[in-house]
Image (tube, rainbow, N blue to C red; front, side, top):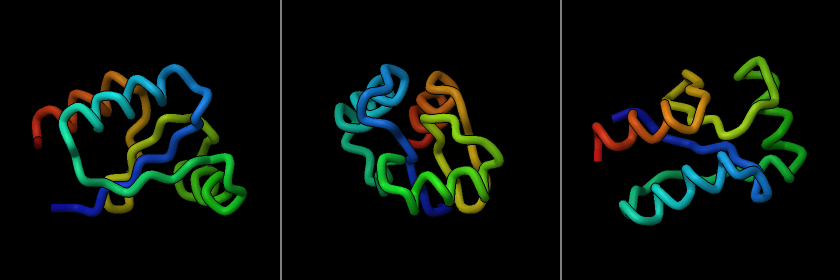
Length: 76
């Protein structure tokens, strides 16, 4: 399985929606808050935009909370 990393903003309602889902399902993945400059810079450089939430599946970004939840729900 590809490595999973979620880029999120603690005050974003869409990020919170995904975070609640992850916690409810106890899904093991790395969380990276974009309040940290290095995480925000990585998201922009590798994802192409500063939009959260963003789930990196290996090297590929997946945006939109509903799409992220659907992806995770199929796999966990």
